[in-house]
Length: 284
Image 1 (cartoon, rainbow, N blue to C red):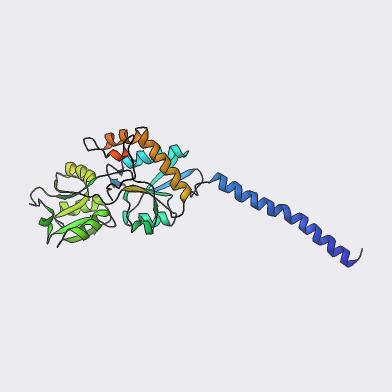
Image 2 (image 1 turned 180 degrees about the horizontal axis):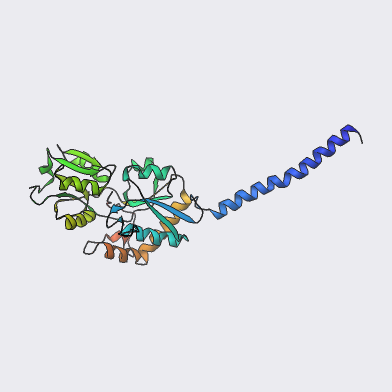
């Protein structure tokens, strides 16, 4: 056999061996996409970044298990998407959205207010919650209105809507930033701050447990609360939105709201027959 014929035969054999390998690679990629259509960190499982001290939204109970309105709602929504394996992990709010953006978590769930600034970092589901903002003080602090905070030290959790609201609307106040509510409440109790600015529902729990006063309640109607999702993960966002709307239409949202916020008014847009298109306030 001539050298040229040997070379031709070698090339033909190499092509024959290589072609199935290329086809196999394409098949593996397609299989991977089919196994993980929502681009999750681990196929079939959702890893959620959340807060462990934001009762009644998200918090850890005595056994360390996550509970709360947002937790139960998200588990229900994820189940409708077809995912039962949901793991909640506690973190500081100030780093939560960046962690979702960097795909350390598939979703951020902590009554997170949707704002234009936050949309630069992550995408959001449709809104699902409404509420008020509250200043907690000691009973004898003498604070009865927002303008009474001028010149005082007011606690906020860093990165929350309360921080943004206070910066914009509470004149002359000195903001003291904390990583979480528990740390801020400790500072309030020891007198290092005059008040702590947080969500109304969470404030009710802290007021009862620590004998504090809900001194000022401020309506905030500028940002709905939604689930945070990494930018560009449209399949997951769309699936969560459909499941979320279904949970509202079949009464699941209403049942959970009545359980976790007894006596609080229910926003009509989240009730069966309502529209979630209109903006509603959030908490964090």
